[in-house]
Length: 77
Image (cartoon, rainbow, N blue to C red; front, side):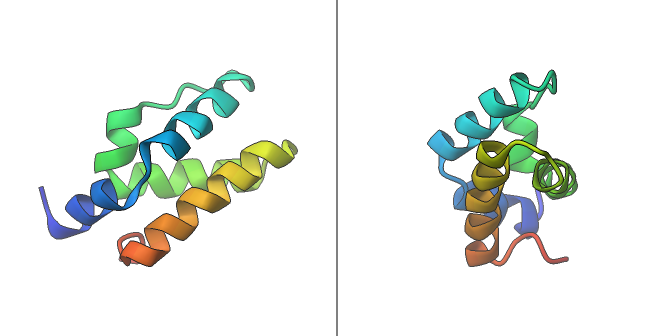
């Protein structure tokens, strides 16, 4: 595991990850929690998909996680 993925895993609040998972599930999208926590590219792709959603709650949940990633300095490779 590299420093980027270690930082990503440590930066994300589990409650926010699960919130995003269920909001995505309502749209028929499967979110793999462990992969989101360990794979920065996967996380960025999902957050971009959520940010483009018509669902305001999903966009807000994605924004919370994006803020956490930015605070950890892990998603900008």
